[in-house]
Length: 507
Image (cartoon, rainbow, N blue to C red; front, top):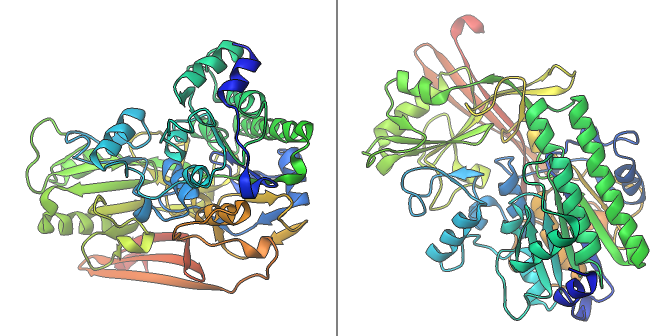
């Protein structure tokens, strides 16, 4: 397949009112702020010097990929866009087991069930297309489907979504593979990232730069999961992501569009190292609960479906049995692994789901973030957590309310941003969509995030901080949990949260 044929396939339209502006979002999956350095990430380091570093940036909770990819794309909290965790139980989509929310078959079934509202808020790509602008999504992971999954036949040749080697429209990925070779499904994540970056710069950008582009890299997340953050392998993976960023910037320079392009480099979440693997199914079964990770028969009232998400576990209590739910929560509160507990129904010593912005009709009955500490791992990097039964101690994961999971990177540079600024004003992943809409002149729907005026042409807005606490006394001790929250206007950011059961002798 020649480039000329591909060019015809993705021929772009006029940019309309936003013709003098382009936006590129680059996601480094799982990138921690403390990994950004002149040695590890020279291209990102220089971009930061030329633009704005957001030093108090936050992901949404749970601090996981699909949750935050959707929050970035929609500018709203999980409760409002419908993606509450990477792995959830949605009996209307699968009555027997949990689902991976980003898989094609799940997304298709979810859209059929919800009349096209599986993601229940419009994405940046959809808003841009609705304004007559062109878009290009290139993701090395399946999360890319959540960023733009609707193919309008009238615009299909002008707006492409590429995700883990597949695409919408479907023919596009095959045409790229004719030139680049097949997407390396069974290769290293570094190779998948390189393939995806080339697909964006050499094909999707070949004729003309779209108004909105998104490049999602799977590193350093993939390697950190296998080896833990701070390992030599994870640092090499970080350097590979930097090389892909450099390639994208070089492509903008060759096209002469760097001066009209605002660039956001963001991570979906931070990262931690697993201190202990907690085998919750076995632990709860021994305690007398009827728990499962997949039902083999019709569940009864009080049965519990567990959905593990690394640093967070979702508990679905069948028929919302109040007595079982209360007993489950009290068991978790007296454990040595629970960090913060959220509940659908009000229970002493917990926070309601809406404190974490994860409350809607499909929410779990109980959500528990594992406990964490700032202890150092085998590579001298702080941030240790307990994790679910799917990964071993010493490996890496995330999704807790740890400071190290909830704080991620955001660096922005381009014609609309100040130069050489370090901002200490709290910001979050939900702020990218309203900011990008502002840049591209898109009329936006109501969003939970805010425009990052302090990084553009405005003064830093006032921020407020609050620490929430919840306690419950037992005969053998007391449970205590906290949640630190920052606010700018009506936008709320979760800083960290943790909990502990203290017995009298431990005071």
